[in-house]
Length: 608
Image 1 (cartoon, rainbow, N blue to C red):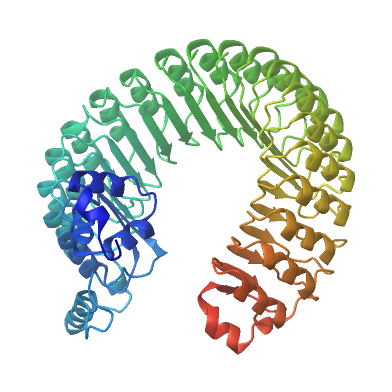
Image 2 (tube, rainbow, N blue to C red):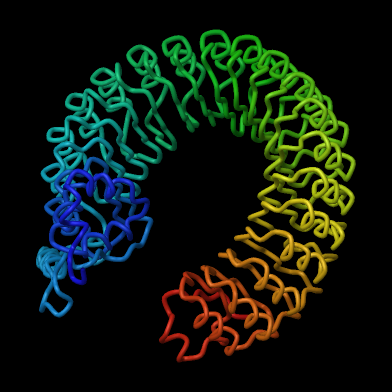
């Protein structure tokens, strides 16, 4: 019957609340709250997470949200982000003043009278943290990213009133030791702590925290904290026996601290180190004492050798992920030891390790049959034979990333394609020996491929994309930026054979014309993002054909396309109601288009 509310008369509160909990976006929840008073009330009590970016008066906003959503358990405040203010909670649009507007004006007025700088009003302060602690007593997760005005006083308030806190992220906050001491004393259930770029902390704060809640702590991140030394890590090793993850980036930590963690935290599963003063002694201890280690990432090490990796290979039999970045003294011998000892290895990334070459990767191919993802970046000594061995032995490989590997060519890609038929992601950038032959093999053999990126590979032509279009029907992401031999025929084949395509980057393709763009519009209705920059033969005609069918388009980059005019830009704006970002030269945006969609238009920093 018209006007009869079947939903509200039939569904109980519990069922509607369960529906709300399964909504996957904030906009959907906001929309539901505007349906009726009952839904507004239920949504208010069901929301458990709020996210706040930089705003004009964050303290007032937190206070308002705390009264609006009393059951929130997760609060994320990131002052790097700029977000729009929330809707006027349930009030009519023609109301004279919203509660948020009043709070904002009142707060700014108070700060002006107090002599606070304008920039300070955009950063949450201790008053905001007090509002968090007063309004969210059941808080479990608190993230304060680059909240530069927050101090130990505000953190102390949180500690005293939010005793169920389990996760605390203080990245970029200049809090002192007193705040961390309070957290250690009051928050005895704390499991996750991120202290990256907390320059105000010293050993005193971290030691006291370890004494207070070390038994429950499972995740710890420390980076760029100049006053945190081995003393802190010794306390962690002594009191944090349940620690499972440690991420450490420090110029001041040496062997003693890492040794203490290795000996005291036997449950350690994930270790990430960027410490230039750590040597083989510490890494060897990790191999000896941390038998549960599953993930190891080593960055910019200059003082350890293959001896460390030999110890890891011997003692860490459960290792599944290994990342080596700029480790100049590691060689094939160390990687061979890991491959021989860690047969469960599933993820391997080698970045800028110039002494690791073909032999080390061949060992991985022979021993690590469960490998699913391989990334080789700036590996000038890795040749075709290495990937041939990977293709023979690693049948479950799903992702391969190659960047600036100068001697890897078509034979390597052919071996991967014929041997790893479950491949889903292939990214190749500036590997100049890779040509059409290798990519044709991918199209002929890897029918589950969903993500293909071939950037600045001059030897890849249309025939390669024809094979991909015919053999990879599930392709969703394609980037062929800078592949100068690719033109209309290749992109047309993709458009006709890959209907699920949602992302397309054809920038710097000088031979691409409007015909290809029209085919993309016809064959790829799910397209959301397209990059056309530096395509000199694309015109307004091609854009018109594209937007007539691609109604889901959300972003379009088209700078330095001389054939595109202000009329083409207006066509994109008017034809795509979901558009979120258009990147274009400022001179090509008419005043009318600017008024209509100024919020989605982005300009180059420099007009040429």
